[in-house]
Length: 191
Length: 191
DNA sequence: TGGATTTGCCTAAAAGCTTTAGGTAGTTGC
DNA sequence: GCAACTACCTAAAGCTTTTAGGCAAATCCA
Image (cartoon, rainbow over all chains, first blue to last red):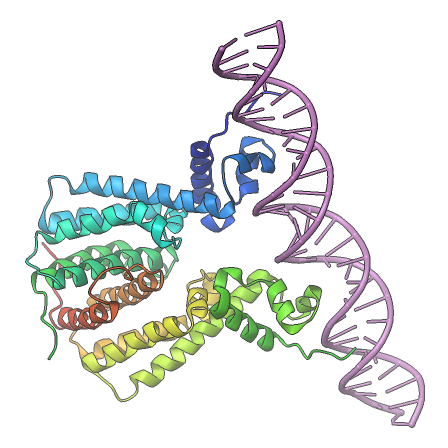
């Protein structure tokens, strides 16, 4: 019997594709094995567990998004950078809903630190260089941006904006305007 | 053999508690049956399926949050209302992480329409009465608020703000300031 | 009150997923 | 060309979901 030539990389890649096709929840070791025409037990030489598979898909998604974000940020500043950066997340989520869901998997501290997560935070900070924010306001702003991007995309993907006017694209554009305006006029703490 | 006195209500309630204890992902029909000391198959007289159970937990969570929000909103306006409303979500998520996760379950259109979801949107609109926003900006603002609340709570619950200063409570307070300021100075569309 | 009906929980069973243990056949290296 | 290694296999146990059919407790009603 010919060998299938499995590697962890290949399995994770297939898992990511499967996630985009049928949803991250439906990604199982069994389904991936089926995709390769191979018995389930065979995958356990390359993966520690089902959770290991999911974690690796999450890490892949975080890397891919960080790479896209880095490219989008090159040569841009201010609102231009803000919008380009935000669009990376939104577009990625639309193109790869399963991977995006994977990226929301809760990672343990160690794994999270070794992931592309810190790169994302770093890039968000880079955007704020176009605005005039000192610490700790900068950190507050980083967190706010992360919240808006993730929250918006998450609600949009969940169909939250589907059945009402105006369309989501319009709100997204105006959300960018609102964030830019907010960052340019960042309020001090209320007394 | 004495009967256990199961009802759909009781099972959903137990499922919700289980979700808060061990995570929404871990809620299974089996686990709920175990909690009642009853055989799994017995639950299928009260629940259509595992998905049915999860959906009902989601609906319960949405109701509970809407009830809390309605109470918080009574007699408040402007920033006061905004902050009280936002705190309802955040507090609920902290007290009932499993239920909160359940509330993020994607519902089909029909179920969503019959859920407390529309009440949430209605209340968010009510808050905006304290600010001067005409349509379609009001809808944009409703969506933005939803995104920030959900996004922030989701990242916070995922541990995203755990390992950096300043603490999350501080950022939350400043996020409320920022939103209030933004709503009072809502920018027009960029040309 | 006692029989008939309903209904609640049961046993049984099939099918799918996860994970471990141990075997066999390709592939690699000397 | 043979030894060693590695990739994939079979087998099996334990868990979950879901359906089908059965017995007994609760309820209804004369």
